[in-house]
Length: 448
Image (tube, rainbow, N blue to C red; front, side, top):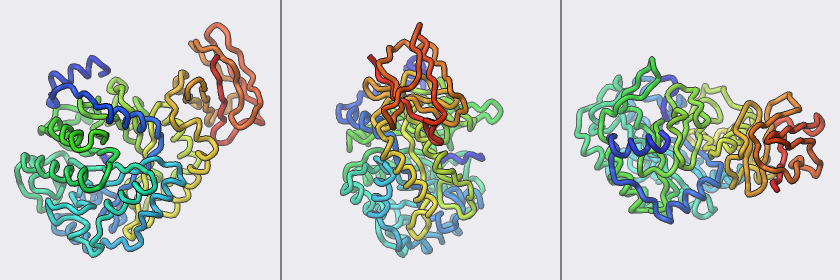
């Protein structure tokens, strides 16, 4: 992930014709379109950041943050032995939380592969005492329990010599050598081929690291030109050829690039860009959307991270994500022994309990006709619009430019009617204090 310390259609056409990503217009297959539809209806995924960095308990960027040399960092795999890892428990935990897919780090910026690869020995099978392919074990369990598996794959690599020229990060890591960028592209294609031919059906590939090789103006908060050619046309074509239904997303914080199947937003609701380096509102495309966020403040396991969000905050973020027409990919950072942090499990259980009651207002919905505003979002399923009232002391809400005709308006968890007025394209809703819910007051609006 990008360390947070550290256009529409016309822009899209312009991008195809003039940018470094030039390629033939991508025509998605029916298999791919069906996968996109499934993805857009899933609404909730589990993100897992796990690697040898977990041993140090200082997040997934520890190699860069602590300026560890190649020689120093290469000692970590010998300490990584997750004997308590249980793919069955992980997947069951995800199912109980209401999760529909899991995205796990196959390789992060440190260059260490969490799967058996023939491209080097710097992987969990060849370099750790554990000697097992955790991605294979997890993928098999996901297939068994009906959860789709996605693989996060870092295009940035602080360890590989052929990741050269260097990018904007990792430049204080001693021991990095010069290499050949073409060889690095070949290396990535070879690893992606392994992931897409040896692990059964893969729901998607989640790329990250593009921003390392892109100029960024810290004053204007604008991305500049690319410093390398990522050869995305070749890479994306390879993925779609090997598995046509495999979805491609890239955490580049830009407008979608041809060949991508969903657009992601890191730590932000689409178009808000509160981070300063995220996707701007004009860069939002028409692809399915996904927001990724942490349960605490870190992606990878961090012993000192006490910034755990409450279950209420997390549930409300899931609701807001759906209200923006987006999935939520919620992250856990497992400990080096293979166990999920207890507080993370508690949070996921609470979300699952909420979804067991109110999942109808989230799953398979699209963004409702009432645009998100402070304290209110809407989701829609066929002729039902679900109004979600969150953290607002107001009882009366006015929705202008509401052109639909209301058949009924009721509280979701009862048959009680909600007071409303629907005249002259204005909808006025009045809530009762005794019907308010501390997390989310849901009102079901049925259209005529």
